[in-house]
Length: 94
Image (cartoon, rainbow, N blue to C red; front, side, top):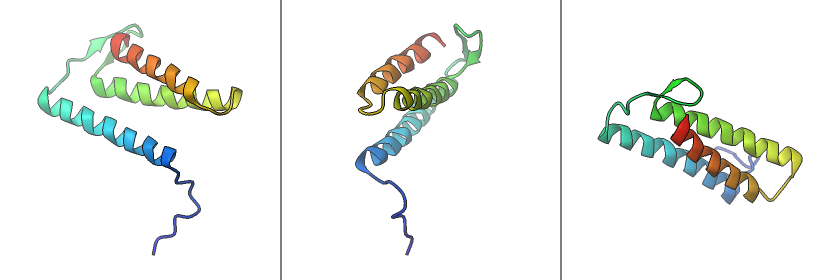
């Protein structure tokens, strides 16, 4: 039997991993329906595809949450709002 009691598996943790899985699955489905996605040059002057922008969004959101925890602590609703706005901006302009 695999003992995972040392891990902090709470509902928010599970929801986080389910969300990450959903994002990757949705991006895979989108790529399957419309292959290529057409790289585009954004405000950072990088040629990025949809997958690149998803990765930048997820990585940036992780840093936003860690910064929020370091400065403000919990609850994390503010970090969530900032991350959503950041994600929209990345997909729109990066």
